[in-house]
Length: 234
Image 1 (cartoon, rainbow, N blue to C red):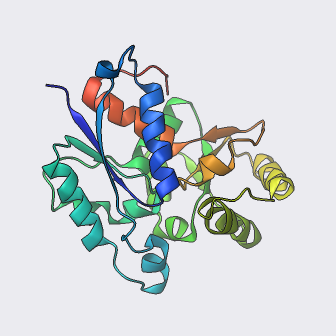
Image 2 (image 1 turned 30 degrees about the vertical axis):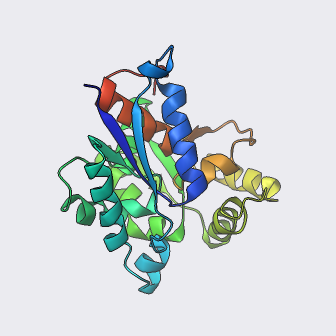
């Protein structure tokens, strides 16, 4: 029997769709029956992860656990989450389910290592940056993490919350170009789009520096887990 991927979604809804789309696009299949069964719980009741980490906001773990258990009951053999910040709570959720939850920051760091990246900038929510989940993963692979300055972080935060989550195009192309230029001058070899809204925001952005999409990497890792094959090399 073929294995099933469970997506613990709703963080946010568009990012959930993006992750599912990337799984389908990367699966080597010639008909419906050769695609992977995917169970999705787009649980929009999960409280904001950044507010929980930075400001003592409502704990998202209880709702995340509900979704994880629901996905397990639906037959998921592996669970993935289309929210980088949510991985701060991964170990707390993993305690309640018997199927593995793949770690997107770690999968991303491993992929960067394979590409020979030695220095990577982390673009993400303030919660993800302050949680240190990408710092820890990158350092485990001997990759130097670099983060935006305060002004740049405000731009990234605005893109995520004011535009992509709101379903609007962002107006920051020129400022992003300046940011990328500064990172390049520091020897950064890749930009990790460490929020699942950012690959959507950067989809029309042309840059000489490598863009690392953790969502794409996570999709490939989930496919490899259930089928041990992908159409696109990471």
